[in-house]
Amino acid sequence: MEYLPGEDMMTLLMRKNTLTEEEARFYVGETVLAIESIHKHNYIQRDIKPDILLLDKFGHMNLSDFGLCKPLDCTNLQEKDFTAAKNLSGALQSDGRPTVPRRTQQEQLQHWQRNRRMLAYSTVGTPDYIAPGVLLKKGYGMECDWWSLGATQYQMDHITYGAFGGVDCW
Image 1 (spheres, rainbow, N blue to C red):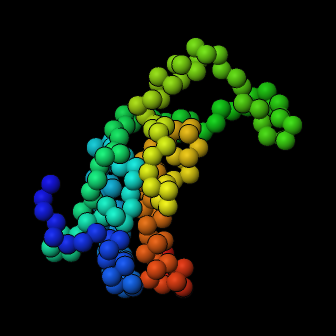
Image 2 (image 1 turned 135 degrees about the vertical axis):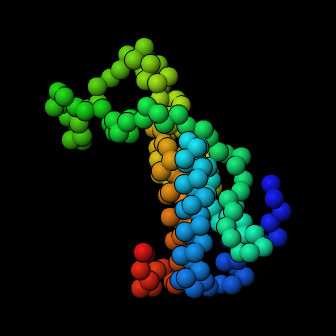
């Protein structure tokens, strides 16, 4: 890894206390490009947070700390992999929610084998930035990185502008 004599985003936020809207847009924009880059190679970072966003000597953002990074095989990923099974019988549970058909152990094993490379199941990440899908333990994909970036952006905006204080969220 190249030497990055700048600081991390967390240190920058603590040092400056406020960022201009232009600075925040610049840093979030560069982070979006970094996340898109790893997603194009079918990896998820799973721990996006200000501490791992490093600045180089020119002030450009670099993504670091790939210790929790996971490769995904997204070639066969379909929308149905993220949705609950359809309730064809119309039966309801006592609380009014539709019942989900039970799978046999063989069906559960086949489903797990088919999806194990398309979704991640480990509960990993930093609590302040972790996506709800990670906590649900039903499998998650690249969306967890976007959630974490949103939490990071909120922190930038909250520190900078006081809980969005009228600033447009572009």
